[in-house]
Structures are given as structure tokens and as C-alpha cells.
Amino acid sequence: MKTFDHLLEASAEAHGHLCPGQVVGVRMALLGCRLIGLDNPRSIEQIKKLIVYVEMDRCTADAVAFVTGVKLGRRSLKFMDYGIMAATFVNLETQSAFRIISTEEARDLISLYAPEITEKRRQQIVAYRRMPDCVLFNVQKVRVLIEPHDLPGPTRNKATCARCGQVVRDHREIIENGRPLCRPCAQSAYFKSPQAISWSDMNWSPGDEKSTAYHETKPEKRIRKTVTPC
Amino acid sequence: MLKKVPLKDAVGSDLAHDITEVRPGEFKGPAFRKGHRVCDEDICRLQRLGKNHLYLIDLENDELHENQAARMLATAIAGEGVTWEDNPKEGKIEMFAQHDGLLRIDMAALGALNMIDEVMCATLHNHTRVRKGELVAATRSIPLVVKREPIERAVAIACQKGAVVEVKAMKKARAGLIITGNEVYHGLIQDGFEPILKKKLTDLDASVETVDFQPDDAERIARAIRNQVDKGFDLLLLTGGMSVDPDDVTRHGIQMAGAEEVHYGAAVLPGAMFLVAYIGETPILGVPACGLHHRATALDLVLPRVLAGERIGKAQLAFLGHGGLCRQCPKCSFPNCAFGKGL
Image 1 (tube, chains in turn purple, orange):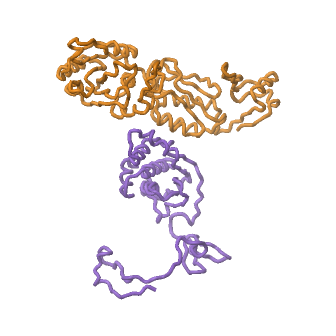
Image 2 (image 1 turned 90 degrees about the vertical axis):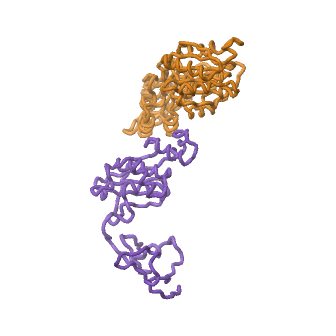
């Protein structure tokens, strides 16, 4: 594992800025990996052993993902939308799992740990660096039962929504009266009033050659045709 | 795990904890100690103490009795110069100064530790001068039976920088005095600083090796400073010339003597024009005129800390502000007052 400072700098760059959440996230990831016995989670040898559940979509989540190398698309990063500053680190090989929760007390202790700094954001960053792990975090040893269809690897199951025809992967369908339904059909969705449309340059593709930037594609290379949204 | 039993059914069992008796203005302490076997004769006294039930304890593996918890806490909290007896009373352990010195509290660790619901630690103020044997801190777990996890967490917090409470011995420093001012140098008035500063230093076990009198001449002041630094004194005190008048050149003299670090101004009243400088590792304290008139000034807050080995910089002088206002009581009780105890 690289040094804390190296990880923080790289994580902040990937995230877009250095913030208190980055400090907490990097430390959370370092502690989580240490507890489940992984010292270099991004390495080829260890990357497939790790699954991380993050319970918040905040800066901390990005830092956790950056340090551990877990990714949503690889199914090694699971987002649980609990709104809790916590993440659980699972070693698939040993089944050991620890849930690390950022403490609320740490927020109240900022001025004690960095009394010489008045600017709030910088004070938080410095204080979160100085606090020991046991002030910054509560840790729970937990059991995480991961269903086979939630593990990394190829799609294990497909079902077709009996109402709209959409294919649903990995047992995310809802069975209603014995029929599979996709979640937007079975439950309320995050979107409303879906309506299929046409759009300009809808015949564009990058092609086989080395492509230019998407917005720099020369108009004459596109076959333009006026389309009317339905 | 705690089991509540009626008093009459507790005869023959061992008390799970000390039972406190309070007789207002007369006595406060344990009437019965943990482990005492309850007998019929105890029943009336226990009832007078308001006890109609007692706890029987059956500890789980992950639980600690309050006395065990207090021992673990005291071990972690007490550092250099702090002593305690492994004899918790009413679940509490008190810690005492092992020698005269200056109390140092890791306030961040203290705050973090006290944020844990199940534990507490109370101390005297940071930077309080204490005498050997003086009570400086006390700790206990709040519940009678406590989970091991919060106690271990508190121990880890306390140990992050070694300990939470320390008593730093003050160096028996060899000090030099330089008293500046044309009025004193030319004999127009009699100096009042020398006896005051000598007393303050000897009260702290420091000795005054030499006293130089210099006029308001920056070059001569600088030479006197260099001379005393070259003699290897641990500390220099300068008086006079710390204010804003054109004749006040002592600061300039300190800079000419080669001070690498000069902090002029402290968030203390009296003592706003106090100065701390360093030539190498030798601290130089500039004492403004208020030191002649007030029993306690910025000097009295900073000098013990310097003698306890602390390097005083801008932040240390600034943080004196909270609590740095003397109440000017008709009868001064410093250091047993709030002056200088903010941080």
C-alpha cells in the first residue's frame, strides 16, 4: 500500500478536490483493508478478493473506491443508499467483514485536534488527519451474505419483463402474480413519464478508425437528416 | 450482567461495588466496600442509605467491572510525573502529582475520551502549577458494569501521544536579568524589577546568576544579551523598553542580538506587551512595566511553561486570550483562579 499522503493526493485529484471527506475516506479504506488482511487491494492478486459496500454517495465514497480500486461495473463496489457515513469491507477469500462508521463525535472534536487553524475546511482536514482511528471511526465485525448473483463475474440470470419486455439481469426482477417485472414497471421509478424520442445525428458512430473528439466530428462526415421528435 | 435482588435476599452475597454514604458537611465516602459479604446486621444501615435492592454481578466475557475499567483507564491516562493507587474507591481512581511541576493535559485526547458515553476523566486545567501529592485528575467508568469495547477505545485514545495527563518537572534554570532604562541606569529612580523577578524565579526553583543594568541603547542591550547567552544561561529576562515610546528600544536590542524568533504581544491583560524570543535554544522573555504593579501578568503564565521545556510561539501567546483577562480581585488568589486557564 502506498503512503497515506500519496493516496490522499491521488484520490483528491481523481475526485476533483481535496476535502475533509477525502481524508476520512482514505483513512476508512486503509483501516478496512488492514482489518480484512489486504495490504495492496489494487494488485492483481488481491483485487478479486475484495468487495466494498458504501452507504453514502459523498466525497468519502470516492476516496474509498479510489484507494481500494473497487468499481461499480466490476461489481466489487456496492452502493447501499443508507445516507450513513459508513462502508463495509469484505474479504471474499476469508469471509471476514468489517463495517466502519465515521463517528459524529469526530466532528465535535475538530477544534480540539486543530485549535491553531481557524478556517473551517482546513481545520477539518488537519483534524481528521490527526485523530486516531478510534476517534474517527466505530468498527463492527459483521457477516455479509453475498448471493451468487451479486458476485463479480458474468451475468448469471436474465429475465424479461412481462409488461414492457425489458431484459433484467441478475435477479433484479420482481415476481408479481408469478410473472417477472422490471422494477420500473413493478414499483415506482426514479423517473416519470418515459417517452421514446429521436435525436439529431442519431446515426453517428465512432467507426473503426481512430476517432476524433465527439463534438469535433466534421458535420460533412455525418449524414444529416432532419428528425422530428415524436 | 446485573441482577437486582431485594435487600433481604442479598444476605450472604458479596457486594458488587462500593456503597457510598453522604452525611452533609461531615462525610462522603464508601460505607461498604466492594466484596463485603452482606450480613443481617448490615440491613438497617443499608436501608438508611436508601438501599432496598442490591445488584449481584455475573460478568460476561465482554464486560468489565467498574474497578477493572478504572484501572485500565488510569493506566492509560496517567503519564510522566503522575501517580495513582490501584485501589478504586466508589469505582473511581484519583491521580496525583508525583513531583512539583506543570500539569500538561492532552486536551484533544481528553475531549475525545470523554465523548465516549461510558467513561469520564476530569482534570485540573492545563498548565496549572502543581505540588507533589496534589490531586490532578480522576477517572472512572460511568456504569457499574461496562462493555470492554468502549474502555479499550478510551485506552487507545489516551495512548495516542503517550498519556493524557502529565506533570512536567520544571528545570532548575540559571537565569540572567537585564534591566533596561535610562532612568534606572542613571540612577534617577530605583529599580523595582530586580526583587520582583528574583522572587518569581526562585519560587520556581530557578536561580538568578547575574543582573545587568543597561541604558536605552539597542546596541548595548544587544551586547549584554550576547554576553549572557555566551555564558550559557538557560533563560534571559529583560525588563523595560517594551512599550511604544521612542525610547523603548529593548525589542530592537533583542533583534540585534541575533534573535531568530521574536513574538511581541500576548493575548493577556495585564501583559499585552510581553515578548518571547529565542537565540538558538535560549528563551528570552521581555517583561513589560505591568510586571512592576500587578502580582500576576503574562510572565507568570509563560515562565512556568518555559521552565517545563515548552517552546512558546505565536500560537501559545495567542491562545492565552481565553482566560487571559485578570479580574483584578482586591485580594489576589492567583494561581488558584481562572487567570490563564483557558487553554
